[in-house]
Length: 375
Image 1 (cartoon, one colour):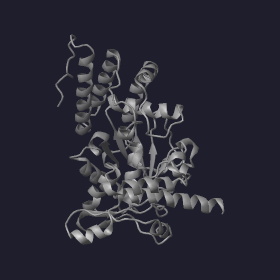
Image 2 (cartoon, one colour):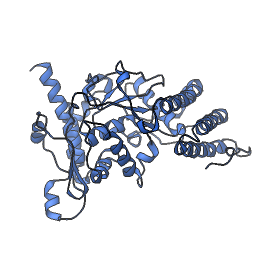
Image 3 (spheres, helix red, strand yellow):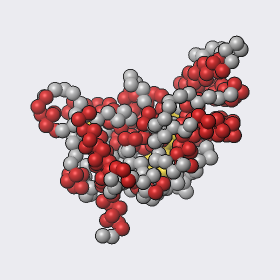
Image 4 (tube, helix red, strand yellow):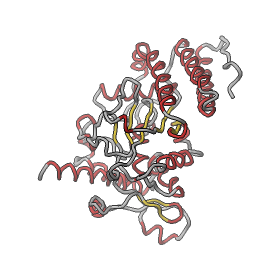
């Protein structure tokens, strides 16, 4: 079998994991005749069929249901959108969501999947030190920007570093607190500065009509997450060549991709198909760095921080580091207070959370709220 056929089959098998995680048997829809959102169930056979050129994009089904298929290349000339996020803000989850909403392939700044510019979005952490701008940067004239409270995003970023250093699967392990403390003491001040640089760069680069700001907290929130996804869906569809799924079906897609909530009765099937996607028994799956790039991250239900093993304990900061973080958030908020009042409120909300953590470090010390209050 030729390498190209092997890669194609591996990619198709990866889709099986996606569809298994999103499925409810079609018979359930016919039996219940209820207005509940529905998923379609994909067998191994029809997954292979969906890989041929006549396959359809993600589809809306009646009553807000959805059917997701393996993404395809955008039409030539389709405008590209940056998917810009600071590390630890759900880049993997967002890649998955964009592909599910649009039915189109995504790429990244390092071109790890070899798709180059034939994509609907390009993930980047730039100007944070782990990101770059691709050589077709001058062709990209819009971006959606994902941010998260640095109090949480910086430790999440370190969990990823710890996994890579220890040859662990991505999003599988929380770093021990003692490892966090050692890294924190050496690098947190740098990351606080990089966070500010990241926000300034993307807010300054594009006019308001060509950028869309979302928060990790909002996108993953049980109450408003689906509405945040609708806003992203609308923004993605504002360019020619991108026809995202119907807005009524966005909550269905959001629940499947962001919340990873397939029916309980399909748990065994999902595990089986995920193992199939890598052509390996579950007990023999390789760490991500040993897998083919195309198999690393496509709609992998294990993309949530909540899937990481290990104690979910707070990552301690020093009082000085928390003070520096608060000052940074205040600087961003004040900078964009007039231009983007929503960003200002987000920064002040983050500031309040950091201030709460700061108070806990020295309960007897007064920690002032920001000048002028929070809102």
